[in-house]
Amino acid sequence: MVVLFLGWNAWRNSHSLSDAEMLKRLPTTDAVVISLNFDQLRHSGIFGELVGSKVMEEADYQTFVKDSGFDYKRDLDQVLASLTTAGNFFVVRGRFDWPRLQAYARQSGGSCYNDLCHMAGSQPERRISFVPLEKNVMGLAVSTSDSAAAQLLQAQAQRPMSIPAQPVWMSMPNSALVRNAKSIPGGNLLASAITSVNELTFTLGAQGENFAARMEAQCKTSQDAVNLNGQLQALTGLLKAAIQREKKQPDSKNLTGVLTVGQFHQTDRMVYGEWPLQKSFLDSLAGM
Image (cartoon, rainbow, N blue to C red):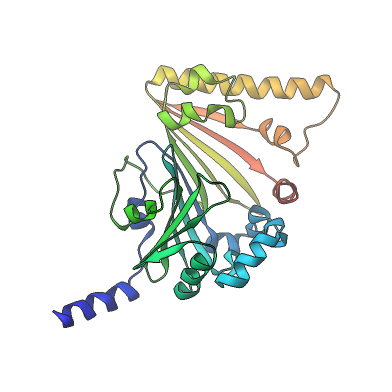
């Protein structure tokens, strides 16, 4: 029995969960799922723009780095997040000093039981919990429960999902899309069309020397896809006309300028969109 345990422990410390296995640990049925591959981003030239430098300047972050030994710019490789109505859940691949992280939780007024640690968040109703899933993979939760991260130790209820190749992507099922429509540019104007979308996926990746944001919307019927495609083209036209009325040119450094160059097409139940992004736009995001 001891030999079996030692063998399992050695395998656990050497094995690393794949992206697909990490995704299976998250509750995704009614969730906004986001992926950030920091390892790819470091090689793409947009790492600094996406993560920004202001986080590094904040006193709370500097204290966290000093006391926990964890610096996301150096130690973080992959983040998969599931944003649900019950809380936010994360499966994170990187390099972790587990004893220091556990000590940091205790120093912050929290506690640890076996491998599961919890501590207070920035607000009373926000409780942070984390647990090692593998030596280099952390399960983390922010919710009202001190033990929410424990559910990430096993596979969760899933919706069918594919993993895009781009370093940044976000996927929303219809329920989460309707719930978060107001946070999507033009979401209010597209409210009726959004209800017909089964799943919406956005990706961000390199395109030549610059970058591109892409959208895939799976609609309930081909007619729904025709309607959505038409509304997206109409909304883009309205933005262009508004800028022309002001006798201005679209500015590639701001969101409005980016939205005016969107291109869309429809195939059966799918609607595809693409927005070229200049590096200057990502630079402007980092400065916000």
